[in-house]
Length: 270
Image (cartoon, rainbow, N blue to C red; front, top):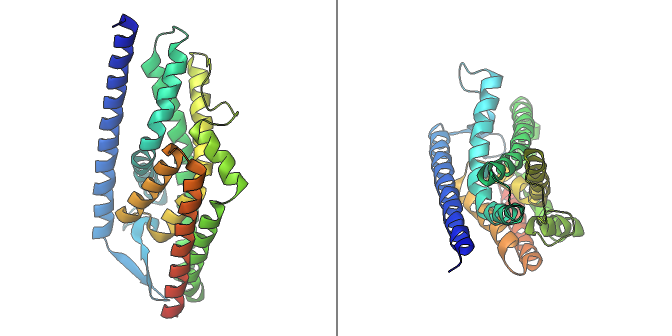
């Protein structure tokens, strides 16, 4: 067997091993964080629903500390949720850069991943700001709180409908590396700046691609492990399955149905 092939196989085993360890660690942190949040309970709200304490400040906690805690948990959660579909993208990057004969491949791969999850961290900041502001308004305005269950169902229906759009298909193609947008690495320069920008591009396209599914997670249960698993499975399958666009539409049907069920339940509560 050629020495280059042996070396590539060894590199692949090491890369997959590190990815598996990172996935296991982030999953463990997510599970512990969700269990801790669930132990705090939820706040009963007008309209017969309960609000997650993820959007609330704990006693004696400042808003910056609350935001930092949420974002830290959010990033760990995103690593666990996105790594199964990100790993093939990182491997394609490694293969492309490795052809240049440059060294420091592991460092460059880490920079791509850092850029990718930096984008998700920014989304986490925005989610916390919006979620916290809505939580305050809902506690101050009972009339607003009563419409939240129906509004949540509407958001889920819209999220499902997005799965059928050309906008979704375009960003999904970028994430799958089947478009002409440069996300399928070809002769990328082996330098830190290029690696960082590549990670940011991946993060922007992929976070946009699953914006609807992420919104579903946020409105149904940001700290609900069952919803996390379902959303993770949906994101992974639509990005890795051979007929990804068709899978995305099937997922859209399921999400729309879930939204309609939520609206029906909300009307029953009302």
